[in-house]
Image (cartoon, rainbow, N blue to C red):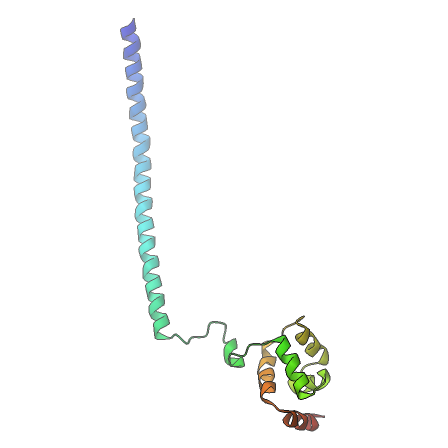
Length: 144
């Protein structure tokens, strides 16, 4: 009897190995295909990065923010700076608003940091920095 049991056990293990082999060969084939696809994608990504680096070398001064830097001339807005410059010129918020083309409420909000000026006001704010007291009062006299 022990011979039948060992023979049956041997046959079962042989069939199990055969089934496992067929399943693993399919998995191995899939893994091989995935690895080749991954390698191709890595090569393509490397080629695209290299192409991007070449393009950056050709035109390093390309605008990065939808051309808004061209309008403002790389002007950075500071709420404190606007408030101190307005006080240095001796202007009220209403007068400053007349110079910039904005309301006095907008000037207050910009100075308090509760709001930021839109891009259309940035060139005027940059120009305000270059004005002196006399120039500002002359411009206000013509606008009032």
